[in-house]
Figure (cartoon, rainbow, N blue to C red):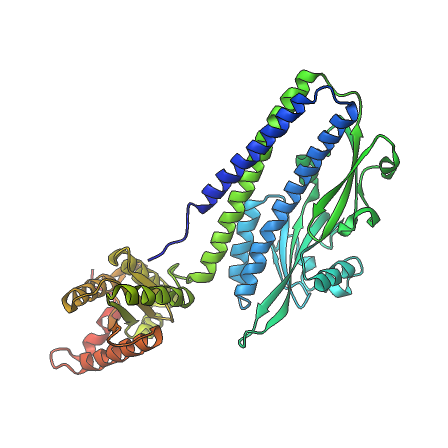
Length: 464
């Protein structure tokens, strides 16, 4: 069945890298052709470059927040473990991120990492004087808003990108769930953008993305009034900052400038390509989390529904039938009772892995319940082929697995239904497959050559 476009992040990253490199090279050629221009033009170009890098550093970091908000919007009933897994991934992608929080109804309930950030738990944004206005503006505009930099409750200084999250209820109505906040350490971003360059004096204003009306962020405010200073807007989520800069002294020789402007396109292209790669990869991971079972790693019911719709449409076009299998682990509760829930979890993981290894590349398996799996079998033109595949699948999933020096086997009941003879949609196919499966269970328990005790034989450790 269809698999995620694993190579898409690489392709997108390389494409953006080449495009950014081409643009950078073009700018370098123009700069070489304008050697005769005045010092003010060179100054403006240098500060414009710093502005571009500042925007790249800020917006690329803040853009990752959209992946978190998309995850919550798609799965508003997420577990703390899922949040921690998602947050840990984002922190690995961008080390400048200090912590990530989720605030249902504008009250912080989830924060990662928890160590050092416990003071933030329970904080109500609407009751916090320093953060209330930024949150209200975010809710009014329904757009991400950057706040700060300002002192944090848990200590230190950070700037926060807040994204409103809108989820859908059971009736499909959209409602305001709360917000996601990503706290970023601004100091490495300033350094990466070049604001610490000793050859220039820089000042930055526009706290809370308010542009010229915002408070000072860093530097000397008088720099904005100097006649030789260059003032530029820096686009950030929810508004703008303003950057003012001028050379600290006479610009070094042309040879040094040539080296500087030669390296910039490569650095800029690398950053753009890398950020594109990381963002695309993060989005793919978020999509995968929403479509896969957390325990076994195989597709879930939502993914099954999508693939079934595609398979039905394809079968109608080609005229080829396909089969739906309903697999159920017999007496699975007794596995948990006798060996513990960890053993049961290991059994589910083992069964899913065995099934994946047995199925063909075109087939598809999903976990749809505690001990239930649904399989889509393509190319089942004959009953003989179908039953052969079922026998192989049952044999593989029923093979013993080891747990704490014990060998445990599972027993699998299988029901099946074929499209279009036994159903025209997934629900009907599963219903008919389910009926066959329970008929098999009843028949298996009444066969004279199969004592009732044998139904539980897979629940006991095999003798060494």
